[in-house]
Image (cartoon, rainbow, N blue to C red; front, side):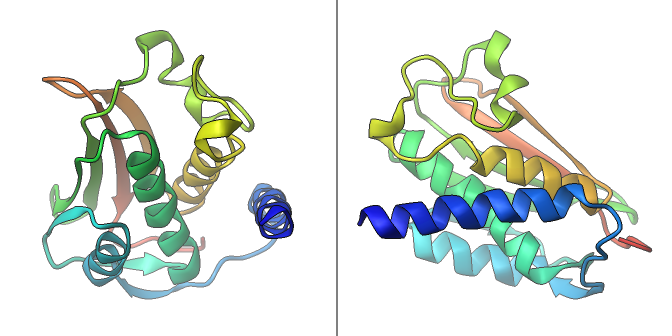
Length: 170
């Protein structure tokens, strides 16, 4: 168990380092994001509401983005996790991962994307090292998008990723 966790930590640190190196090009292919989301939701037992959308990007990294968000919500989200994927217009899409957990204080919502940051009360005993959401931000940014964390009406958290449908030169 310890070796598996250590290997995962090293893999995440290496991926973060590669993503910071803008000279390393990412894969540039058509990705069925709705299908990827459905697979990851099934794996994590999350509810899935997805509009059929295809984007251009690195499928492996986009899967990591989805997996990190869903696993984080499952770990901290109070057992009720929903993922939504929809088009905003002909140029962008929005992915939301919503939970009904304890939520993240407003002053920590932007900090959760910092490497190794964990809000108070979210220690190692709950799993993770504070790298997953940092990777989500790096992957979204490398695909020309953004991610935010905000409070969910009625309690819980919403992570919202906005990505371009077509991205040249990632």
